[in-house]
Length: 467
Image (cartoon, rainbow, N blue to C red; front, top):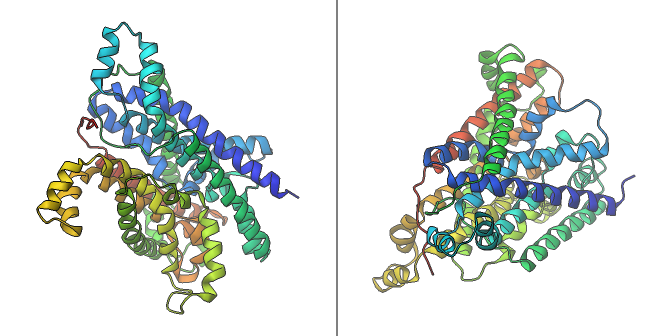
């Protein structure tokens, strides 16, 4: 039997390895993107960010056919880490690309005789490091809480999340589950302490600035390899949607049904409507809170804390507390979007924080003197100035809610099941018809994510405002 310490160590190892490898790959790829043409950067960015926005369990589904039938613990961890890197390396590259050093600094260094290597590691990297560390923290926290991915690819690998779900849902041992939840929270606090100690700070994700970067040849090679891997893995979903079961048209038509032998409590289409309803409520909660927190003078790591607490833990806690909540809330579908909003706030905060802090105080002070407060300040002054980051945060929150799996597995049941839950149930049951339906639904999810990322990546170069 796996001990608590082993579960803690396994979860920490997976999270740290995932963040380190994603950062090592993302840095040269990001420098390559910065030196690429605008259209090339937009196209590549769209594909690189799609895995980051897809549900972790969906990435697990796409990789599952490539995995050998029998793997040991070591190879199982490598598969999980590899999936995390596939999801997050593009995000890290985007952070690096959006935080290049202004052209005048690099030109001054060139005039002083600095070599390309010296400029990269003595001038650029120290200024980019804070944003990279913050993004690495985000990757580590996500990797420590990717319940659906471990469930699909782990093949016997136990982490704190999977054991929490097993203890609560299978063994009905809430005491042990809460003990593991405390360990998982302790791991999160350790990551935050480490990140704060080494100077992590949120950095812009979109909004290029003028730079003299010449790119990176190594980054170009790694970027092409990463792009090829993403295209191959995602294309496999579309191929299986076409070839499995009765075929593409029938698979999409079957989404209005309940699967082979009526294994679902509701149709896939009805589950998608449940997810859309949850998305709207979660966004209405998460975005205003993140906007307010992002406008504060000091960076608040407390705002980021929920992102490292597993959705499974949130689901467990709310499940335990449901008997003490008002009857109008307890046992209703509202619990799911409320819980989702808790860990969507940090994601939108990461995007909105640098954007709101970049708005000149002179502009805001002048608006206040003209009588702009509250909604008028947002709609007439700050909102238009940070329109792009705001749209990015909205897109991230929407896709994050739509694909959330962990908390919904505790709180959404029967006719309130969400799209990820019914997709997981379809792939968990034998039969090509069920798997074909799941691949058809996954194909739609991928297309939606790709379109959204493509739209939000269509930004012009902007010059960073000097303090």
